[in-house]
Amino acid sequence: MAAGTPDNAAGSGATIQANGLRGAKLMFLGAAAGSSSSPVAVTYTDGTSTIGSIGFPNWVGDTVNKFGADLVASTTGRNFQSGYGDTGRQFQLFAVDMPIDPMKTIATVTLPAGAKNHIFAGTVTLG
Image (cartoon, rainbow, N blue to C red; front, side, top):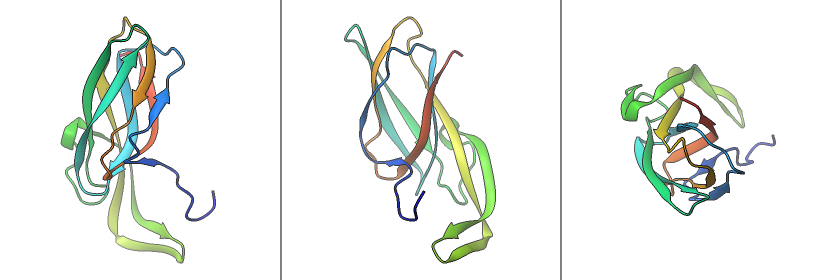
């Protein structure tokens, strides 16, 4: 990926087609630039919806389990266009989930519109 190319959905509020997925939880991989919790809307094919909230800890120096997050990865330092730096700090990536109706089929997922949350991936899990 070229430098400066967006690699996440940051505060986009985008609605994503789910192609008929079913499961018990919606899980996201991400972090926040400042701790933040925002609503997520799941619309099912029968027209009903579930509104939940997900939150990510700050990607540097925050309480790891804030908002029920699980630490996925941590590294010392980060990449800049000029090279590797900030080696005295820990940078972290988290997983968070929200319950959804396992008996219904998902039509769409509307991501948080809060600019602080950075979502890198999402999936539906069975449990």
